[in-house]
Length: 193
Image 1: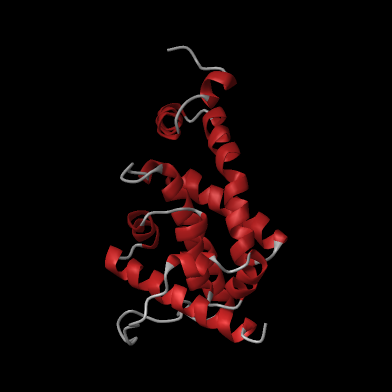
Image 2: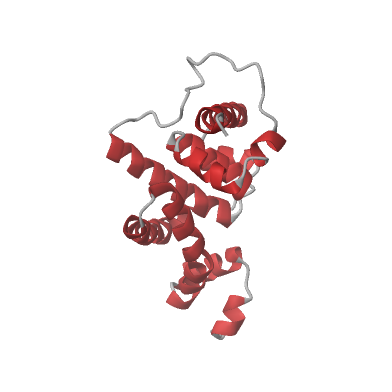
């Protein structure tokens, strides 16, 4: 089989590119994956790490992890889900190390009381964008991450479950609690307005 040119490579699916890269380690294949995902990864890193320099370093580190572990991608989920899993886990691990606090979610499933009043998605989405940014910056990073995965990145419960290596029911509870925390924080910050 003759080598593909860059235009032909760019038309391939992620999985096709991965197979070709793993077969012959031609850097043009990995470069296409880098071009497709580097901006998205950087955006996620900057939203979680809140520093351009940290986000740039994280993006490079994440691509090194992707490069090294590409053979482990099993195609059980979409490649984008796998990439975002690595991205979120990298950022959350960095935040954990920085804060030296292993617990970044506001509540742990095992020992938190159940929240009876559920927060409707529509209520959360009604928050003004500026206020929502303030709220997201005032809730624990794990809660922020899971809400961004669900509502900004439009991940399914199954995708979030795979990315965070948790059961789907645990993810549903984490989302429920994160929404409750966001609503409570919103009321605390903007109740006078």
